[in-house]
Length: 401
Image 1 (cartoon, rainbow, N blue to C red):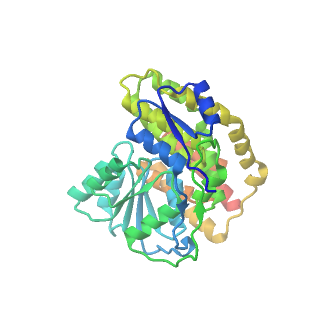
Image 2 (cartoon, rainbow, N blue to C red):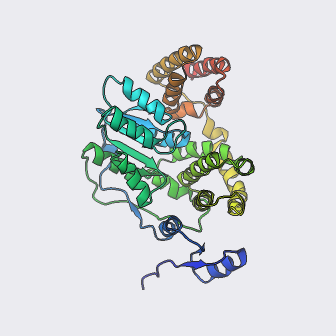
Image 3 (cartoon, helix red, strand yellow):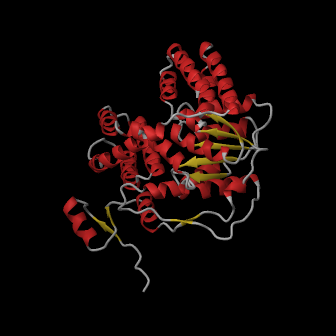
């Protein structure tokens, strides 16, 4: 006998006792009235998401070495995933951290980009405005693919209306990511005999590590690096939310919740991703900061803390931080980048510093070093004098590594 489809109940309240009684009957989720299309969509996708099929092409056969791709993304973790996946294809990748920087890079380009991957929500200039300028003022037809966690029909239509060609959902799934790129670039690759299936998200799963790794194409080392970065900011989640709500800073609160929601999904915190989604919707829809669904987020944060801390400590044990030895070729590349970075720091060239840090970050062995993390921190604080000392230290470690 085939399994019954999941049931979703809609009720006028969602107190803990009612929710527990309902879930015990086999009903998978409870939505509190009034509901809107976004809420219904999110819960339906969560419960009934058909297994995502990795396309029939073989990602290892993708060769984009002749393509120049600009990635426009302000979040470190999303940027790491995108650049990592692109470098697997041997593409030539450049990075911009917001729409304004992207427009400046495009205006100065000597050789045109073949593709632009554009985040939608960014500081200084968002992806919509950047795309409008690229299309209307620069009159460029370069393919632009939106990278967004918002995948409702009206969100996709908004991307297309400003001139984008396609969209990739966040958190990234390897099959969707590569499939969209190949379609937009009109590239064909070798076919696989059978597709692989990725299990759908489970509404009851607090920490779906293996599912998250599968969505990254089985790249466990990449997941580990992303998880470590995420956990270090995750510790401050309650304090950050309370502070933003107390300050009634709606724009910053929405940006923070939206970003954390996407990153939660990337590392496999499915239920937290959904709760942050509910909080994001509530902040958008309410005129006041009262009665926000914050308790659910905080309870899940508390419930997850011990297991996530254990995972973080396991990834940070000496065995995973053993001495790294760089090849002669790797040393030459890294030393060259560090020399350029030293010059950029001395000249306070912020855009150049940002670009070179991303180049260094793409080398996983370097990104895991404590000296690089300290370098990154001082650069974010614009303490370039201190950053120069960390460059020297990192250079010595690479030479001796």
